[in-house]
Image 1 (cartoon, rainbow, N blue to C red):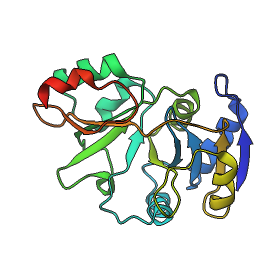
Image 2: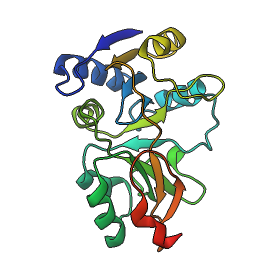
Image 3: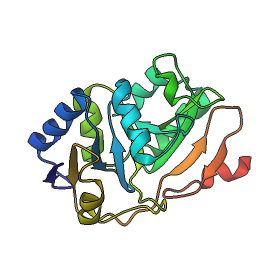
Length: 206
C-alpha cells in the first residue's frame, strides 16, 4: 500500500492526483473525511466495488454511501425535491449522509431495496478534491476493524489494511464520530442515525 501524509487544510495536489490515478485504474483507497477515515473507489468500477464489499466483509445488500464534490452534482445521481434541496443547502458541506431516491445514473449495486442511495458532501478538502479530480463520485464507507469498531489512528489503519487497499491518504488521527444519516426520500424526513452534525431541524418530523 502506498502511504502519503497530507496537510489537512491545503492538501498537496500531487498526492491527490496519485490517489485519483489509482481509482481510475480500478484501485481502492483509504482517505479522510470530516468525520472518520473512509474506504473508497470509483462508483462506476464494478471490480473495485466488489473489492470494497470484500474488504468490509459485507454483502451486496449493504448500503454504501458515496461522495459528490458539491451540491449541484447530487442531481445527477439522485432525485432531489425542493424540500430536500433547501435543507441540504443549509447543512452541506458537512457531516451528513442524505438518503435520496436513486437516479438511473447510479449503479444498481448501490441501491437499497427501496431504490434509494446515500450521498455525502463532507466538509473535508481531501475528500472533495478526490471526487472533483476523479470526475465521478467515490464510495464512502468507514474504516473499521473486524469487530466493527471505527479506526481513527492512521498508523493502526496502515498495519491492518496494508495488503487490502492500494493507497492511503493520511491527515493524522481523526477523533470524529460517523455522520448523521437523514432520510429525505419521502415527504417527511427521518433521522436514521444521529451522529456528527446538528439534526435539530428534523426533530419536528419525528
